[in-house]
Image (cartoon, rainbow, N blue to C red):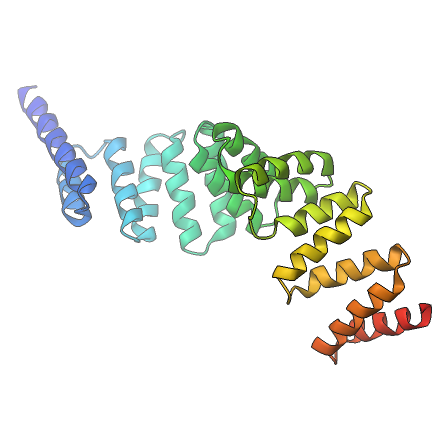
Length: 262
């Protein structure tokens, strides 16, 4: 019994030393201490998670994944281990595989904004807009000053067709950062969808003054102007598109249609 106690005390000492080294930026030395502690206490979930974390900081996702999975084998409800597993898989470009552990981490500890933001980023890549919306809803609830999460929430809500909610979320984002790139386009899309075409036209034009090569917005503005029967303005945009992309059949067709209307 006394030998077991001494072994645990030595493992704890190694762990504390490793934490101190890690906090001082000596990750390799910290890992060495964690490994020594693990040989003394091989069933320590805390040590396994700590090694996975340190490996992630070192940019070693494969090792981080290994130890996160070992921790989960001991406790499948460990939120941090799930997050580390998902983050490692994401780093290894196994994006689809990363979603489930990141969602498990989020569900196990919905009070962690980092888990919410990571889940949202991976869900965005996988076009899971429902999860993007859910995760950013949680992120802004946890951190109301997170302007980027407010913006991304607004974008997700707009993609889901929830334009009233998107308008409110974007207003929160712009209160915190009025010059966020892309905000004028998103605001224009929201105002257009809420039935305010004149406001949307001006917002799209503001966006294009900065992003002159954004042909997607230029096409959207051209279409909106045509819907409002402002054919001369729409034709001018179509001509700009043709000048920039003289072999684009859609641009040529739009220019011809608008020329006919004129």
